[in-house]
Image 1 (cartoon, rainbow, N blue to C red):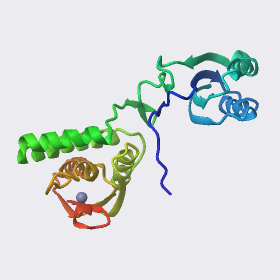
Image 2 (tube, rainbow, N blue to C red; image 1 turned 45 degrees about the vertical axis):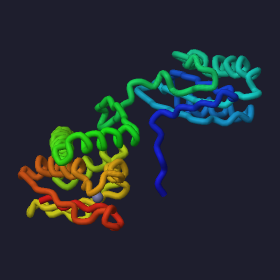
Image 3 (cartoon, protein in one colour; image 1 turned 90 degrees about the horizontal axis):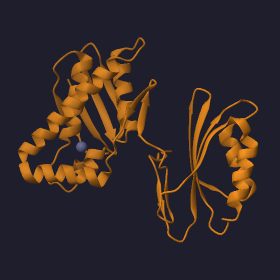
Image 4 (cartoon, rainbow, N blue to C red; image 1 turned 90 degrees about the vertical axis):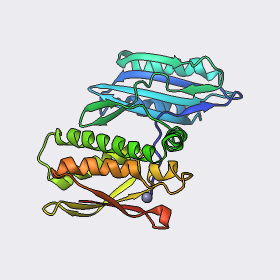
Length: 266
Ligand SMILES: [Zn+2]
């Protein structure tokens, strides 16, 4: 079963009394877990959490919870009091997050957006699917085949760069393990669901399957377009990891009615 992962949810309903709470507190397991304590405090009052976002760093836990207090606003002071009482000295910061727009709430404290790989926090600037669509379509409409080439090179440069990052990871990895890590990173960034169908390290030949590729989604209205950005990316990535200037072919494609897109890089 696939589960969608939320970056930062924005909720807006002017008729609702949404409330966002941001807490930084010390964890003392097994006696005190800040997140479970928060859940208990809200459950007790029959208030369900809309979102809960919890991160731990060292002995501190950063919690952001969104609750719907519509018709229950009177409980706010009581909840605040109970949190302060239960958390005591462990509470380092406690804030009610206000956006200034009634009924609109999101994790305003949640910045920057980061992608954590091996304790290296990489800042992420996400672009929604509509944004990507506009970028792709604009490039192709303005530059035609030239736009396709630009996308291919952009992908290739990014793929090479990504491979270099994976090469810097500590630990003993085989080449195919490094490729797996790189593809996992792409998947967690939402680019698609990746699978290595075949990998011949000695012959320097690999077949990569992609389901639900974001590029297919954003280019669905561009006639005759092939996944050049992703193909370029995979060529760049594999070329560095195989130490060989590779070429790429898309063998199968959802545009042709196949179940997935499949790239041969060699
Ligand atoms: Zn395809």
